[in-house]
Length: 102
Image (cartoon, rainbow, N blue to C red; front, side, top):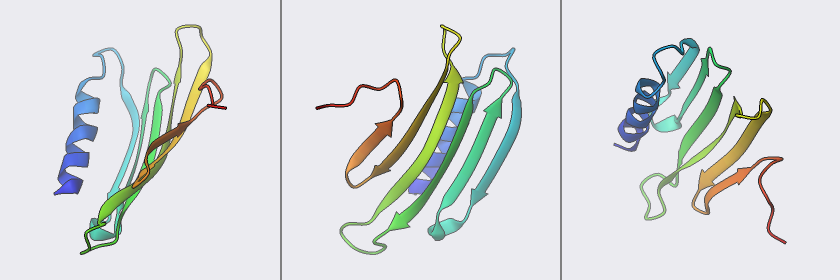
C-alpha cells in the first residue's frame, strides 16, 4: 500500500510539470518489499534521485526509510541541491543554502 502511495506521488509530480518542459530521463525500479528507486531528469535542469526500503517488516515499527536528492536551477540562475533522508526520525534535508541550527 505504501508503495502505491509513493508511486502516486511520483506520477502527480510528473503531471505537474509545465507543458514546455520534457522528461529527458526516467528510471524506475520497484523492487517490491525490498524497496524502490527512481531517477527523473527534465529538460529545464531539474533532477530527482531517490531510493527507499521497507524496514522492520511485520513489526509495530514497520516503515519506509528513504534517501535521495533533488536539484534545480533557482530564479537567480544558481544551481541548488538538496540531499535528504526520511525515516523514523522524520525528514532530514541538507543543502549548502539551508541554514543549520546552532
